[in-house]
Image (cartoon, rainbow, N blue to C red; front, side, top):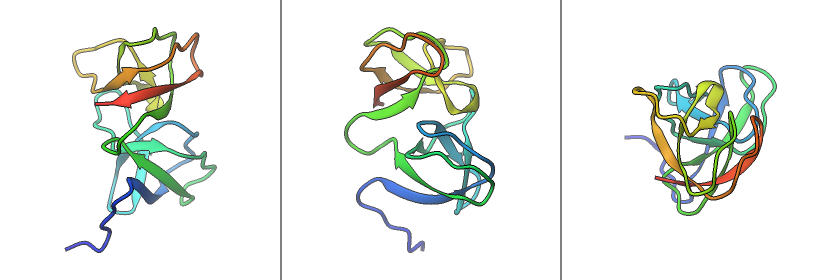
Amino acid sequence: MSDRENHDGNLSFNVDAAIPEARLVKMDSATVVSAAGLAETPLGVTSSATFAAGDGVNVRALNRPGTVTMEASKAIAINTVVYGAALGKITDSSASSAVRVGISMEVAAADGDYIQVMPD
């Protein structure tokens, strides 16, 4: 049984490579995360940027109450279903293998914009 019980939805991990802030991540092992890709189920979103493999990062679990800041990969309208995209960003394009992550609560005008998302 793990001793990693958590009640606030903030989880600590190391990264496998540099990952920017507000990106979706997936678990690679019990202690390491990496950027989630299009068809990968994300665990949560990075709370800060990391710069090299082995850096520590706080991950906000997607099942935690409230909205989460995520980075858009393109323009996204408000109140739109969003899915995981390449490099841990989000998109409104629902490719057959895309994983739904929530509903946009703000407008993203372009790639690289940060918006609030209500996770599913």
